[in-house]
Image 1 (cartoon, rainbow, N blue to C red):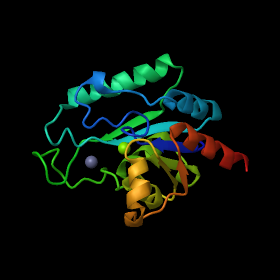
Image 2 (cartoon, rainbow, N blue to C red; image 1 turned 45 degrees about the vertical axis):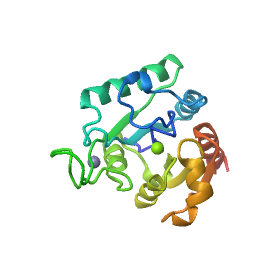
Image 3 (cartoon, protein in one colour; image 1 turned 120 degrees about the vertical axis):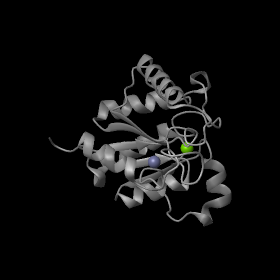
Image 4 (cartoon, rainbow, N blue to C red; image 1 turned 60 degrees about the vertical axis):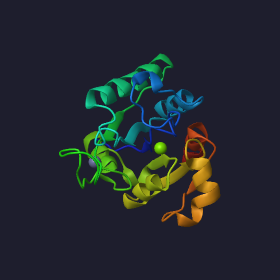
Length: 193
Ligand SMILES: [Mg+2]
Ligand SMILES: [Zn+2]
C-alpha cells in the first residue's frame, strides 16, 4: 500500500466548537466551515483523521459510551454534509485524575504523538507529507514529534493562545490559519507550490 498524506485534526476548538467537556452528543457543534474543509481533503486524496484528547473519561465527567455517541454524532453530521473522516483516534487518559485504567501515563495524550503514530501505522500514512491542525500548542508539539507540519487555528483556544501566550509555545506553528478551512487551503496550496 502506498502511504498517503494526512491531515490530523484536533476535535474541540478546531473541527467543532470549544464548549468545554462534551458530556452529551447534543453539545457537539461543527464549526461553520468544517464540513467544507473535510470535503476538500476528501477530494484531494488527503486522509482526514481526527486526533483528540478526551480526559473527561478519566475524570469521570462522561463515559466511554457517551464519548462514542458524541463521535458518532460528529461522523453523522459530516456525512450529511458530504464529508467523511478516514479515522478518529481518542486518548481517554489523564496522568493524575480519576482511576485506572484511564488514570495513566499514556503515550497517546497530546502533546505525545501516540495517536498520530497509531493512525499512521493503521491507515498507512506518510507522516513527512502530513500536517497536524489544532488550537493548542500541544497539537504543534505532536506535529514536530512525528516530523509533520503544524498549523495553529485561531478558533477555539487558538486566538487567545496565539495573541497572549505564544512566547510559551515550545514549538512554533508552520502556519497560523483563521480556521480549519483556511488550514486546509494552506495545505492544498503547499502541495501545488
Ligand atoms: Mg482543541
Ligand atoms: Zn492516552
